[in-house]
Amino acid sequence: MGRHRKPPTVTVRRSSVIALTGLVPTGIVAVTAISEVDTMATSAAAVQAPEVARAEPSAGLQTVAEPVVTTDYIAHALAKAAPTAKPVVKTVALPAGRQAAALPAGPVGVPGVAVAAYQNAERILAAENPVCGMPWSLLAGIGRVESTHAFGGKADADGNPLSPVYGPVLDGSLGGNQVVADSDDGALDGLAGSDRAIGPMQFLPQTWKHYAADGNGDGIADPQNLFDAALTSGRYLCDGGLNMRDLAQQSRAILRYNHSMAYVANVMAWESSYSTGVAPRPGDLPRI
Image (cartoon, rainbow, N blue to C red; front, side, top):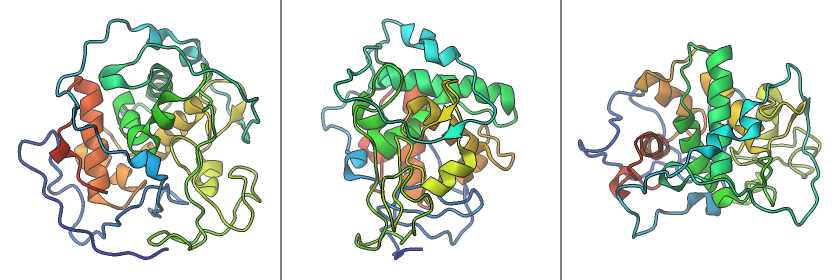
């Protein structure tokens, strides 16, 4: 499962936008520099995401976000698409030279196409799993930590990244990462012999195949597509009857992505930021 080491103690202030005390049982092992999805929902396997997905917030980050002038991104056509019941699981080859979507940014600068994908997933999950209560802002928190919303919104209007998003190869060559043998014959991650995390929400191929969802109604569940990835992430977090309205259950769900309370703190801080429009403070974002 990779080399585990005990990270430095993380202190979360009482004034933080989240309180993590008591959210997980004592004795949980925190894994540093890890950010991939487990191969099954019931066991949180953790691996490291690309460094670009770990960009620290700018020193000049404003504490209050600029007001959103328009909400046109909510009306994005793909946000109204209906998913198919049994999508084809594959990565679609796309031509080079595509342009980034020109949708207006959402709260605290979330790229508009990413907001459309997260809100689309919220709408679908509200209908198919109302017990979960998945807010789009939680999916945005995951997307921010995992890939900075596909590298700052570098995706076309259909939600496809201009360049594929991949994590490091999980062959044991990178310290702290687990070794994951090939599970898809390279069909999703383009590799033979070992796996790596794929797409803006960073799923391992085996996990993607288990939870794959079609978020844009095109009959395909492509891990690189923001709409498909956001809905699949929501289903993964909600699995097992978890309720995102309860902070303890929300924390359990986030730990499926990364068995680290620092990771949970980061995701929940960004979730709060996107739901309130107030940027997180550096102290709310402990090093992962």
